[in-house]
Length: 350
Image 1 (cartoon, rainbow, N blue to C red):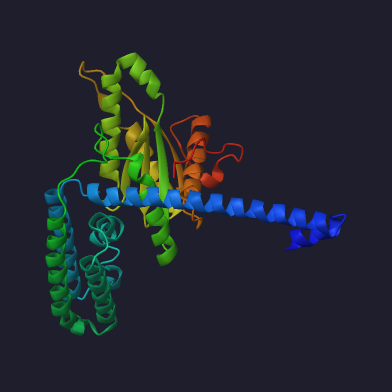
Image 2 (cartoon, rainbow, N blue to C red):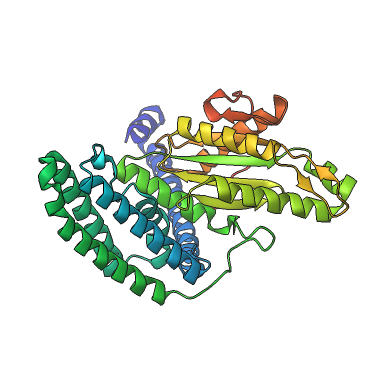
């Protein structure tokens, strides 16, 4: 409207003003149409990727994952039983939602199984268990055990629902990197969009690590590509050992890895990144000829700052990783500490 007023004020006559306003309106219409088409196409691509993500699933080995989650749920139940029976303090910190099983279900289980009445029921049961547990810890210690039968009944229902959900998905391994068995970058946008949505809705943090092996070209050139493959597999195994089942591990490309740390603040992610860096530096690989080969990594850390665009988060982690490279490699740099003149070199394709 302000532009129309300006055009009318600056035009020599009404005909000229009308022609200018008509031209401006056409420009705005074309721009809006272009934005709408771009959004529609991006939305369609995202929907296809999301559908593929559910099909190929993060649960690459159904039987193994089913047993692992069943064991985690049982461990949580046993710990709760000992805590309440022993009248121990601090039971209110043992919420099911924040347990290893709870984090896995929220961040991996739901997107793997897809939204359904069963997944909603599991979420409701978890919330009810935590509510009952909180009330129990506020009561006299002698009355805490009265809450156990109802909690255990809900846990049994969760186990039955999880068995049903696991039976519905097949053993599919597409979408993973053939060399490292980590996820490939195809599903990274889907994961980041979902984590941003969860972070915004639940007001919980999450963070990103971008890890690059130092002097990897020299490894390939000096020791052969087999040594390079061994190095990648070795680092992938270390990442799996040093992270939780609810976290996401990607081989981003070449010698780069991305770790999505769910329910982790930037300061917590920095501690985890430093532990990973140290573990890689202290764990050389042994080549077939008996020679040992040391490895180091440069790691960029970026915590989600509330911005809705996952590409911005990736760019911040990318800039931090390159700052670590410039500062001498084999180090961790947090995004806010990266030099402002070092923007990320690329963004994910939407």
